[in-house]
Length: 223
Ligand code: FES
Image 1 (spheres, rainbow, N blue to C red):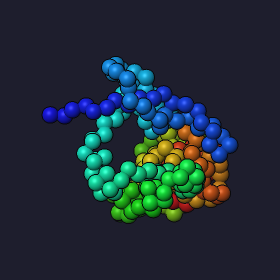
Image 2: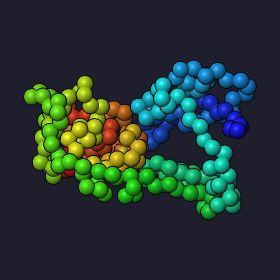
Image 3: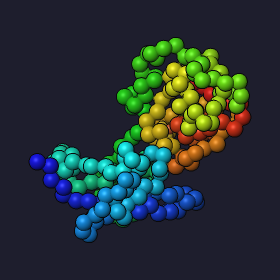
Image 4: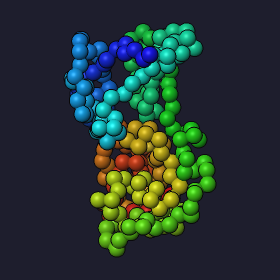
């Protein structure tokens, strides 16, 4: 029978990161006693990024103790595992080293570059790219250059350019879909986008993150 070992909660807070403020709910502490479960949260808990976390279907996450035990046994020690954009991980590694943490206790999990998280690219597209079924004649034109598709942006139909690409069966890479991992980074040939949510780290000049961007005028994307 399943047994609950620990309930951890924490409210989001604003932190300074690389000269800007990031709203994050990553820090959790063990709840001191009983904890009421609400529709969206545990009492005393909250999520920073409500696009990637939270909501009625993701109000609570359960982690199995077996997973922790497995990795403890595999690694033979309690480690720090870093996961996020490359520059963030480099900064964190440096900060941990400054605190005296031995390099062998610091592990890095890479989001990007893995074939298993690029389904649209590593396997054949189920259908040839096509216009979305709800394409209208208004809104900025989003051209997927390699796929030869130009579809109109419908702000009420899509939250991101990635969603529009998927509606067109345009092959596109993605993983976190919240602007953290940069797996979706693609070339922005022309035009301009805004971000919502703001990515943790901006893409390189001339690129965009399709998973969290929206066009503000006609754009051409290297997909
Ligand atoms: S899929 Fe991770 S940043 Fe876009």
